[in-house]
Image (cartoon, rainbow, N blue to C red; front, side, top):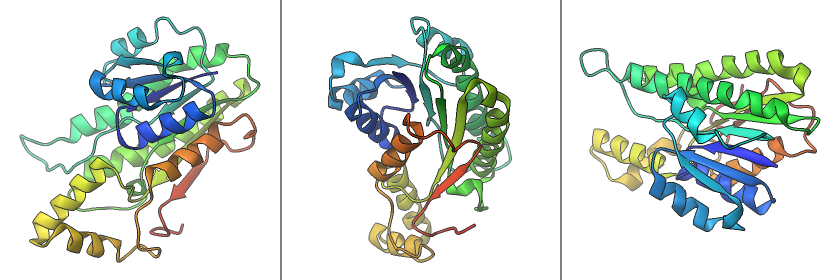
Length: 248
């Protein structure tokens, strides 16, 4: 069974890759940095059965080229994305963030769908990695919040549209996860508050009932369940994994 994972070169994407490789899937790793992808591949069980291709999901042609030798797909983990603040004006990152997180994910799914429909499994899977900020507003993060909220609408629409083909589409909304991106965010928080990174961490965890970040492996194991053959009933759903930071 072949699965595409975008943003596989680091963080949650790398952990998902390791977890799914352990379960015997053949992976197609996509990302913008080939060296990072090769590093991920080297960590995987049976590395020779996996592929890696550079690809910017903002460019549908690059996605198509990365998939040109793929005949069918059992699943897709649409994980690639960027973070950070944006402010209206000449240097606004709005378009960059929306084009990557929302439009890029949409394009990736659309390029993969014909291959997913060719797979012989009775149920195929698409999992979209969104964020807790799809559900919360954060000052200065309008593009990120909007892009991640848009992914939830995309999830529901695609789940309804492709249910007849046995394609189950779900989203995850992680809260704080201990990745390089989260650590960079904490450092920025610390700099803004003029405190140490440890103090910034304690401050950031105050609204989190369990008082901790998740580990990437926890997100990966939830993905492994959602993409498994045994999972045939979840579709159009958003699952929150955030240590109690948001309880809808």
